[in-house]
Image 1: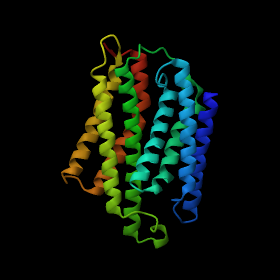
Image 2: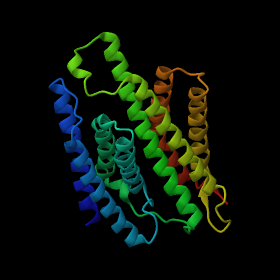
Image 3: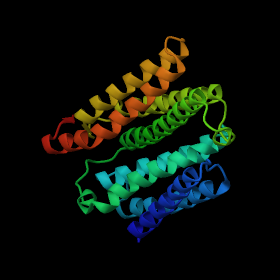
Length: 268
């Protein structure tokens, strides 16, 4: 039942992504309520599916790579539904849907990712560490999507493409502020998640390689967020840096997960 709900959620994400691509093919940008509604529906289905998973195991549904990918996908949608509304950048939905749908699809098409895995005792601190860290990755993913919108808009303005393509897009200055604020929020949530990781009781274990990898990501985002705040980094360079660090996260996440599992690198 839970996988069925998660599969339906993935289909809803992909439907929103397909609509956005169709609109782009028609030389217009999808900013209406259809994508928002589809992403909202997918989010509800994912929430239901993850809730059923948590009920089966009695812990946060992050026991294998399938659940982790699904949780990050859910977090991306959650951040879009909240922050996209607050900052009034509905255009982010055109990029959020492919990202959330892609993460969910990877987990679904590779059955080996959903194999049962023995987990150490889950304390409150460990669950908060894992949950907040994954939510932070979703927030940083949304910041990367805002960076893409900023970079594309800047290029369109420089190339002086048709005005019909630019009508729904916020000014580049506003997009720069959204990108920085969302990245800063993601960094703060990640800081909180790592903070819980350092107060995990001695009776629990935490994978050392993942903790060190998270610290590397935390330091990278902390550097670029501070540099942009201090005006040491321009908007375009910050957008590329935000996108680059997130791509690094996506490319290395699976490998870090596998190293931690195969070598048993745990902090006592």
